[in-house]
Image 1 (tube, rainbow over the protein chains, first blue to last red):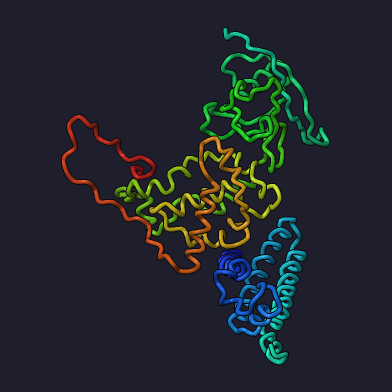
Image 2 (image 1 turned 180 degrees about the vertical axis):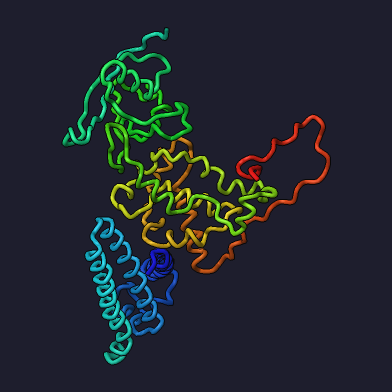
Length: 126
Length: 278
């Protein structure tokens, strides 16, 4: 894929991360003001609140989107660092394919966790 | 005869291919006079101590871009650098880094100019006949001129390339001079070659590896801001990819102004450059 396209996706991923990290900060640190994300009493990282969020399909989707954006953003940056070590054509292909496969595997695993969580928590009774 | 200011040491990076295994430093002591530039000092060293010393220079006034050198750790024009502004009695002069060395202070600029050529630094238009035999001038407003004017001040001295950390580590990266010049023509409303240059720029040789260290703009002896050109180029390429902006066709030929020329303004000279050779 052309570098222009990859770099444009890198920009988009950065914006997505910015938005969702803002959401994360709001949930974690403005819990006294914005209670909607922390319905149970106690800390935002307390079991009841974590369980409540994990059962929410809204959060499942945001986790998947954030996971994809963060993985792409980070791995693209890592790829740039590796390519600046000036590898040969074969090694360059290895970097591209290796990072793509690693990113895809991590995304599939992470997305499975996020999407399976609502059902799992529901079975546990919240 | 100019007054003697003080003794200074010129610490020069010497290298003669075929003779030296690697570049090395040699010291030469000369008398510095008021107003002396590094280039003047090099001439004095050559006259008094090292007749085989080699470097490039031509205009002596910061226009030709030949005498780019690494002077006390910073890429500068030797003709444009006064000894007094360096604030030291030891002037270390080496060839521009990030280039091969032909001899002594002469860098091999061929790779830079090959990349420059690949990015087509000239107006690309479809009206070839008009370019060969112009009937007027291409229309351009002062505002449109402002969009690229500062980038056209580039003298291709290579100082920006020598200062760029990405050029130092990534041989595939085109570098600030060629990219800045590609943007200079892309942002010229008389040009219609964006699509042609895009074929090179959207790949690995384009602006994507720029870390925005900004050193290119810091060292430019002409005050050009290639780092800005590269960021603007990224924006243009992304906007083009997302089809957020439709590029205008290259500017048309301006109609010949009508009206009577004032009596006290002499007539323009006859057209030159091929148009008269019929």
